Length: 448
Image: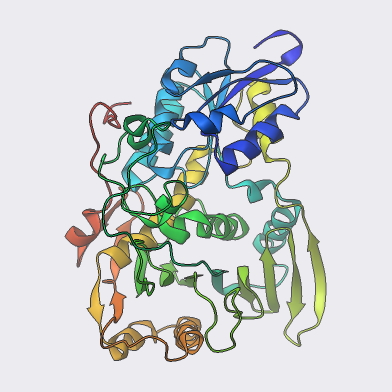
């Protein structure tokens, strides 16, 4: 660290989110952005901070060699998050890593191990951990202000367009170093129209909307309920009902059980064909966030704030937030203190929230096509899950022929939260997705 507690940082990944981090961290007092990196040379060329010169490397490993850099902000595609974070810890850097913090359960644990071994401060980028509304709501719920929590519905009900369909591989632009971009993932021919961003919907690089937007509200759920672990029972259903090059589901329903508490995770990426609402569906009066049903009422909270209601529907409290604007400063202050004790979302916390998104994806990926009656039977044990399925079917409004493209129904999986793998029935099917293969030399090490 330089004089006057100055923290020198570098941003790895200069896309939309990375560009936001360039602005946010550069605006913090006594924080200096020294370098940026991106395999896409044009994206680096767009980065400026006043009139000051910034070092730019396509290969971020050169940034890790810069002794003057104290911390790195990782805003790469998902498949790079864990390995870049591990290498940064090994190089003595503190780390702010975007969500989801990993591309698989296994590598997320390795990132936690690296933070511990090298005594690094590592913050997960689920910024709503720093939102005053969520913090206040968590205190109230855990104090049982509204009585015992009965069930929770966690949702992101948006709408995205199909990503298109190509008939042949798309050439990678000459200004992108594809070897560096692919890194630990397969360096396969690109089969999507748009090189950037749409990798979210292909499994080699992304984790679908559950790992993209869903993980924010999943993290809020764990925060509000005070969990330090994840559910042990998971069953998932849905499909991708666009005819495009995407692979991840755009309608994804998951029922999890944490001890005796039922949690529905409801991720939708299609317009409401019933009402014609192109922005997506509305369920339980909301398009996103957590609906928390308690004995004395319920709470609806999403990015920026929420409200609590009694059992007669009267609003009894308003939660006012800012979406977590102080999350970057929270990280920088922890770096200055040399302690992770004050971190809003320390890497172990971020890992566990990311694991929940992986669990939902794994159950679906391990599934098989199933008739609608079987899907209904699988979710009838919890009323909200049953109602969510009805809502999905209403939203689709007969636009899908389920005899030609049926639901994909995952097996009911049991997850060992301590050993971080599946046990019991269908364990082999689930464990096949706990770890992803790597491409040399970009390998997540077993011993970090």
